[in-house]
Length: 270
Image 1 (spheres, one colour):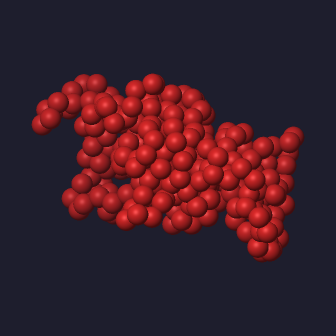
Image 2: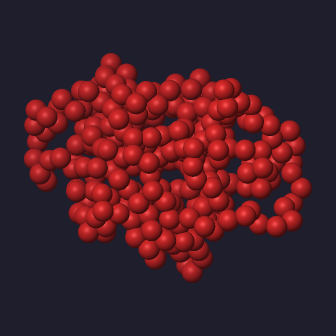
Image 3: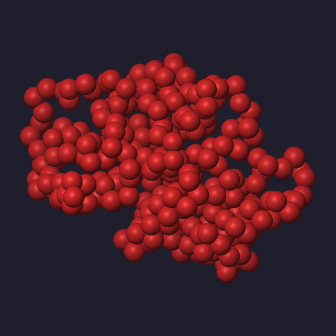
């Protein structure tokens, strides 16, 4: 459904992404992992069509994203940034209704289909009872559910999430990730999520894409990608990957790894 071909991105002459080629698996939950500065957020913004690559191209169902209008793109792709901000005075229902802009004519009021989509998104994320509350008065976990509801109200086929559990305590992290996984399965969404916590990635993601210095190091099924060797090379830490029936379920970190003598084999190959 979504393919990147030899994508690069630069800021002030500095390469942030380098020759990235990847195909987002349809109907799966993809985790994007890597050290700070690896290019995770930039890759998601390029794949979502928010910024254009300096080289290469991104295709949605075979069509270049650059050929689509913002509204056309937003009908298929939704992007939830890390710690989304919203102005004062907006209620929960106002914020969720913002997700319908791509389905309405400019300045047109919401129609019945829009209202149904908003109600459904609030029900799925369990925020309907908060509809009249100012979003600025909510807890961190409640706000994340509201912003997730806004993206669901878009009725996308592909959902990008940038660190959706950042700054949340463990209880809310578990709640949000379980909700996303459930919705991904029930709504048959394709989800791509940037995440720091490798244990959460192991527990929730079907596939993992690993970045380092803007290059794809590994991409494939979670069990094949999240290995002690990869974690050592990419993150510089020794670890033990706890598995159940062959699938990783937890990452235990046991110490800092020595500096790698040579680059990861295949690094830079998308």
